[in-house]
Length: 277
Image 1 (cartoon, one colour):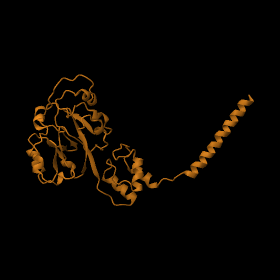
Image 2: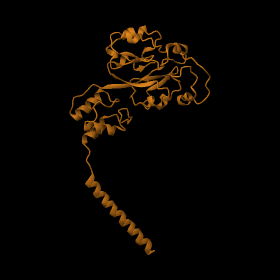
Image 3: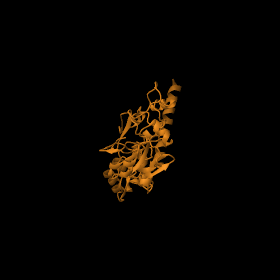
Image 4: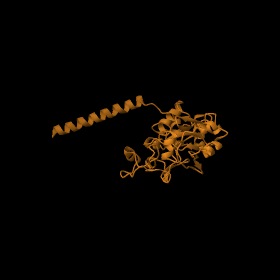
């Protein structure tokens, strides 16, 4: 009985001793956090989506205060929030730069040509293992893996193709990561250019003759877009046309470029608040 009492007192004493040591150590080693960080956290959306490239909003706030990140680094924050952040830091507010997800495939359920009947797991990643049922090995499989991983309900499937809502999209990159066909990319725009968003709705680098056989809206590598807009807004990478989004809205002829595309691969995506592929 005495052993139990002595052991209990000894353990309690040790616990009290180490508690005091920890309290003293915490007081000695405590690093006071810059109060600006707390103020920034009150203004940041708090979604912890990772769209800014940081693990959390707290990490971003720390980097902003240290000068390691711009005040407008949060893609979810609007101009008002960015302005408040700039005021907290005592700096001039900068224009909010927006990144959105762009889908590079225009073949919906009607336009897709099939090579087989697929029976199996109804996810893009599973279907892609065996190639799925569509003839194009670069096109959207249409099972909506991107919709499932979107934390902001910014993507919906319409006629078998992903539709991205420009307002809701935070460019977190989850859809890009999960897409087994790599048809989704994150592109940078300013607020003025968003209403006129365009895209090459194709991801197939094969020769034109091959593309024509499997898709009526695929890029055939004719390079008309590149020739009609000679400032580099449109350029060819092999047989596939691409867009340089840093230049395209300065091109005076891109309406003509869209009109002249023989397969309608270059598409206007923005209608109201959504990107329609």
